Image (cartoon, rainbow, N blue to C red):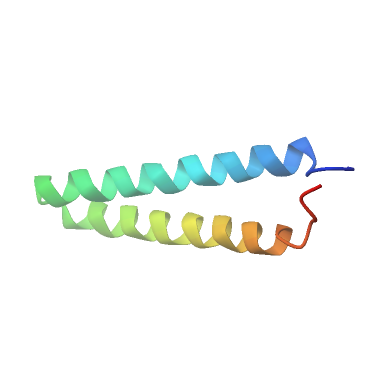
Length: 66
């Protein structure tokens, strides 16, 4: 697609960002509730989805911003 990224790529990136933020919220709430199993699950979700999103951003970074 000229001048940007395909809409499908953007939608997937948005969904990864939402999933990463949800993992961070779950992690934070479970920290205050003392639910350590849910804390670990939230941390893993935040880390994995966040890593995947950042990796996608850097791979797509070689598109020229014209």
